[in-house]
Length: 241
Image (cartoon, rainbow, N blue to C red; front, side):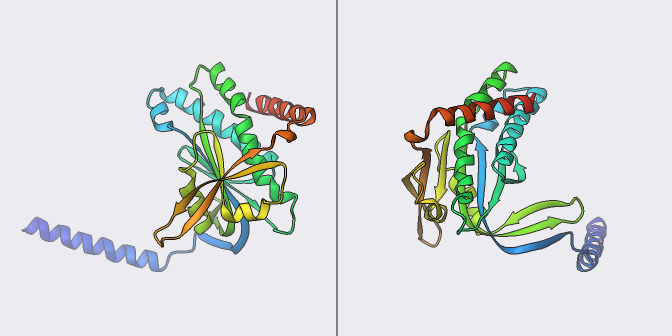
């Protein structure tokens, strides 16, 4: 009984100490913009846990390094902003202005280019004697809250759009790019991309939100486009190596 009493007093003292520290804590996270229109994107590796379990630590590090570096380069090339990697996925966004029709297509072009560069990334993995990679990509438009962390000066984003984009990602097939209804509404007038209804995301509020699968229209595959993709692919190889 004496030992239990000591533990209880120690716990009470600990909680009192933490209460004091928390109440007087300086803010480490500051919101810079709580209403920014943006297109959120998430790319997630398929079956990464199973793949990584069969690799040694060094090969696992190589595997993720090649993936993250390759995708990061593609996002930067399309003027996207990388927020962070979350395990085997990468979170990024594009600032959006619904009146700027040309730049509003960048999230679509970025996502499709990721799919088109899969073969290139897999060739790099193969050269390193690593398994091939598959991934799912999801994007949605909406308002987000942007915050910075004072201690390490990093950027983060919050909001229902981020959560929604994460949840619909699992609805994509391997090597598929899907978008939500709000993004589809903004880019619907384009003829360069094929946007087809795929399914519905069901929320706890019994609302059904349509999901769309995105591809490139065949007529866009001109010799110029093929050359641009080849040139872009060569830049990825040089950058990774």
